[in-house]
Image 1: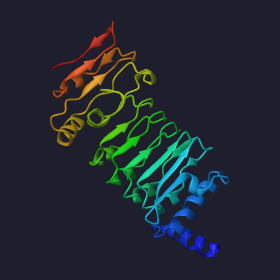
Image 2 (image 1 turned 45 degrees about the vertical axis):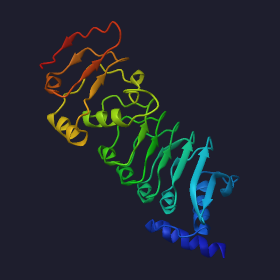
Image 3 (image 1 turned 180 degrees about the vertical axis):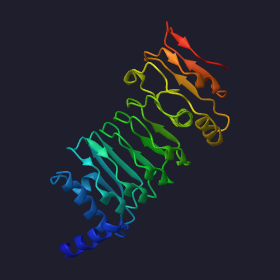
Image 4 (image 1 turned 90 degrees about the vertical axis):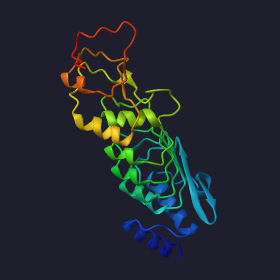
Length: 251
């Protein structure tokens, strides 16, 4: 009987068809745990069941997950997914099928990028990505219209486009204004040219929100001429005693 259920769930996994009952949910979780060499961890110890389905899945400081299994996409009843300090390196595209997910906590892992499919999580309200290795965010992230708060401090988000920076300013929680930008990891000396496109894109997405550059903790010495076209720029935050060698801000 178990082998038959496994065959059904694996067939569903291949096409990312959702499970429809607790038996399939629990087998999928078991597969994910086993693939991460967590065979001693019991399904009931890391999940919560409600109305005959698994609605939460929590792993904390549990071994080395590496890439998260594509099987996660079968758990379509998940509302809460937390995987902290699990050495998680990548998220699968199948994350898009978690249509009821409202909380995603992936702090203290080894993520270097996020899939564009993350933007398809229409129910997502809270996203925690602190203490990873992210150097960029997908452009699609601004389509998370239901998001209430995101935290991405202590990553490597040094030079994000202005419209994403403005979106982060509006949604970051827990670390104050511009707290998403962990500048101690950003030792740039020259800002790249800014094209007019991000400005118009940002303004259409977040009308009324004025972006700001935070250069605290950087060895910044040069602003390229195109930064003078940033007519929506409200402020440049500099450290105490900051002395730029050349400011080409042509307002």
